[in-house]
Image (cartoon, rainbow, N blue to C red; front, side):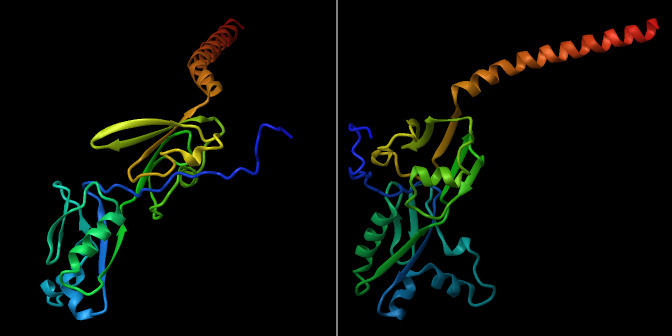
Length: 233
């Protein structure tokens, strides 16, 4: 056994800070409390039912809140509420504090509907994939992406994240024992993961066009030679 490795050491883990809400995010928000009648004016479903007057119901889009280009949601009775840049928990706390002016011990339940990741490169799945668990770490994200291919460089996984309108690129090493302590251990909504090929795969990719040309020319010369012999005979 390697004496330099402490197998009994506790694995530290980064603190989960939550997803930062962005313009365009879609939220299900429900207000509950002791007085069912009192909470009705604060639920978008109730407002939609009143507006529709029971003549056709409401679509899922009508029953959700979309963060507008000003970074706000339009909440029944309360009006415009800033949501961009907050986490779900922070928005929940903010709404509950505002609602205490009208309700006794209000409880706000928020679910983010548009959680998604984009996978590029050496993943089993590619493109944009939705997920439901807000508290998602990098290893769980890789599993959602179908795992990595055998050609993937696990020490060179790129995480591309938009922060305040600017794309940042972070390199992650999935073989690192302490990756769970990385500040990028937890995924944010709209993150992009790019699995680069390892060095051997990159070398083969560079050689392939040359080899293809060699085989193409060899095959063409062989065909010409065969036709020549056929005509000659």
